[in-house]
Length: 91
View (tube, rainbow, N blue to C red):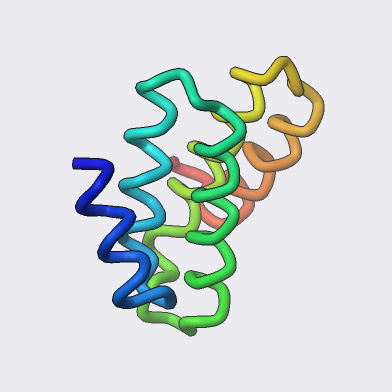
């Protein structure tokens, strides 16, 4: 799956979904730094994509926080959890 997501990122670098899904795959594989990098790319794409991807931003922030926790960066993770809560208090 990861190979497919990486290829999709190459073909459509501004599409949020392959970065988001690739980040999820990398996290499961224990590659927290790479996972964080993919979630950051997903976040940038979502923020520049206008309202089309706004529904996905809270989950991107949460997953980014989880990746940071995996690296032992709990305080940084909390910042992203806070952003997710601001965007979607029921998330």
